[in-house]
Length: 145
Image 1 (tube, helix red, strand yellow):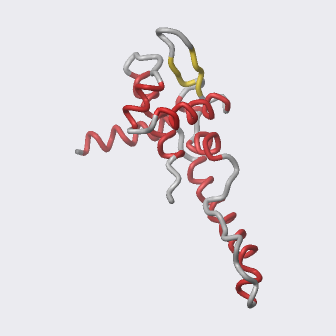
Image 2 (cartoon, one colour):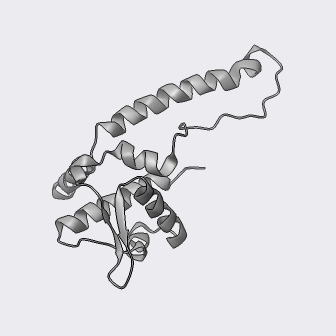
């Protein structure tokens, strides 16, 4: 099963950055939910995680909604990823392996090492990219179409 938290949170953050560039300071969770095709409950949970991480600020009331807490150039994709997924690795090892041979006895340990290495490489990639860079790249894709 694929985890959709990061791509959904990234799309919401990019939508907020685009809205800000268009002069719209805040978007509602309902607007972001509709725009991402995400269940409203999941969107509210993701927005809460992003706010808890200091990436968003929320305001209540008729004109309430969420806005970026920092400039787009100060938010990395790694920040967004960590906010919504925590410190989990990329994959979960199977815990129910019967220890019948050398492979099965050491599979969890070995898999943990592979997962940690892959997670570090993914984190390094996400750390090099900011929300501003991602939005600029998407704008270039739009021009190319």
